[in-house]
Image (cartoon, rainbow over all chains, first blue to last red; front, side):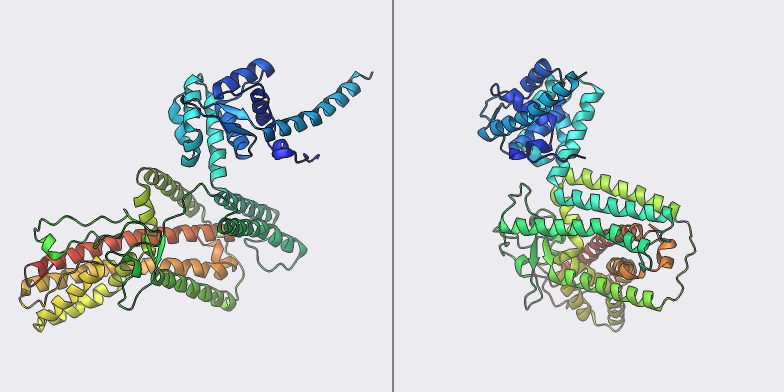
Length: 108
Length: 414
């Protein structure tokens, strides 16, 4: 069994929902509902409300995203520099995996 | 989805994310999948909020799993005892490993808390450990004393017992009810319970060493175990329900046996019957003033602050007789309750070593496993401790009020 390499901010330890949230927020600050809509539109994945806020809480705790001031109940969140770095490292790792996978699958 | 689902999450979590999630739930179409997702996230959030408790639950479950597997595999009759074979030694290590890990995690977590490495978002329990002074009263619960955490001064009479003048119709305001302030733990109470536990440990060790019969009868305890599981669920449900509605009162209830007032009530419960017998004798020989003095001292002990002052010179024969006879009746019940309270830590202590004997666990509630028996006995002990303490509180307060009423009609100064 392959052990996940600890990445910046420990992103690799909690998997997809956190990455999807970071990817959504990398385009700009969003509140919960907007993140769900964006993830659904961009990736075709439906995040549940509990899953989303569980991921948000973890990402905030790790300093990868941060709440932004709002007068509305729907508080927006923005990605931090640490979050961008963690996401970049995560994507770089997986881009290699995807690249190698595509090459091998393309072989007859 | 109904935004009330947010209540499933821990309070500290809700303070940070509750509004946002509630707004999101209002916009989320209701479906079983969405509800299940919220419940799952709430369970995870509770786990994150209580890492030590979760670790112990996991450790106990893991140890129990090891026990069940060992029992099924026939490695052990019931318990981890005498690792005479490699299998039993491995079983012993596997059984103890999660518990040791849980303990290590708790210690490490506590150390990091103390050093400030972990910024806890949970408020520490506002406990104050009292140190008895020369007069025998807890230092921090003297009238006007300020708690160690700088809380407001403790009122002069935090106990529901009113002074005799108040009982007899005075317009003075009723004293503050218990459970509204920080619990004052008693070193004497904790020392006594700890001592009883140690006595139980020694008694269990002697029992183990002197018992030569290591065979087990294999008696079925399935019904008792089922009753314990149901009882545990009921208690857990009531604790959560009551704790959410009245957290301060719930905390006061669970800490009651270990508080200074709880300790005084327990001592009073032990002494009630012999004192009532003595009082009856004093009444019969006409020493009413002495009876009044004993009752004054009782009220002074129980009421912490205000107490009746009087010489009982006009204490009526009927009043004294009433106090003494009712003391005989309530004294019997109080003695039984005090016995139950004292028996609880003794029984848990006995379990530590005595349960290493298969005979102990096979017929015991929670058996045949060591861990199951330990849990069942601890649960029983907590129930006996709490119910006995509650009964003592109710009866001793009633008795003190009755004495106060009898004394109020005579020479009493509030």
